[in-house]
Image 1 (cartoon, one colour):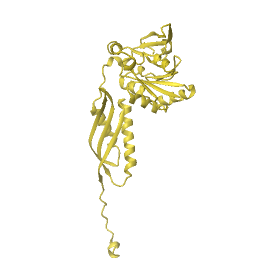
Image 2 (cartoon, one colour; image 1 turned 30 degrees about the horizontal axis):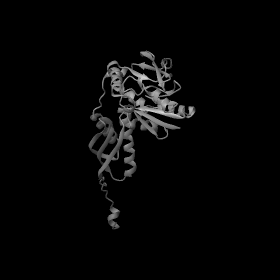
Image 3 (spheres, rainbow, N blue to C red; image 1 turned 45 degrees about the horizontal axis):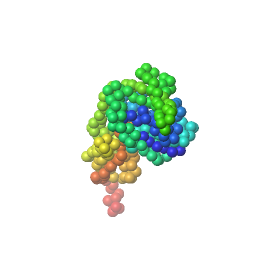
Image 4 (cartoon, rainbow, N blue to C red; image 1 turned 90 degrees about the horizontal axis):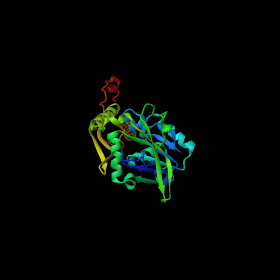
Length: 291
């Protein structure tokens, strides 16, 4: 099984071009916004576009909600696709999806700016931001049970090959998720601080936490994720490497699950060890025996 990916900022037309990219690269399955698509059918998963908030939509898209990844992994095992196309907003996102679904490493990453003009991407963003329109690369009939109550419109897709005739690729659908009307979502760094401090303070072996810092990793003006650092004081007598690794994993999982942001690293610096003073006990026999 091969894995390829199509990446680009939200609202630039990735889902609109998904069928064309899949055909050009011989991909017989697509993973887009939390669903597994094959031959125009939703095989498994639940679309992020059915969620009522943007945070939940992000969680759904990266398969961190309980049972979601397991369901899609099992479906992939059954249908055994030849090549899967993963659609995501960044390279980190598609790599994370591939890892979560236990797929092979991504062999090829296609960027939306390499297959769409600036004008086409601007038009796609206009429809997304101003009109709240999102595209799903499956027929309208396939979405009836998934998008009850949503506005759904069909969109026929044609592809011209060799200038001879037009070949139908498939049907897409336009939906308007509830969260489209919420505007831009900004998660303040204080939210991340609170998550880190709550997890660390719940760990009994950590006596104190200091200097929690959050660094955003940018590439081409796009926020690609977080790097978190903090300093701690530990109680003496514990196996430090094991406990620190456990804490790092807990912090990463909590932040990614709660905010939908990707955490690249959690750096924990042990600043000091705290040693409890032993309680003094008087034993008269020790004095007599010279102990």
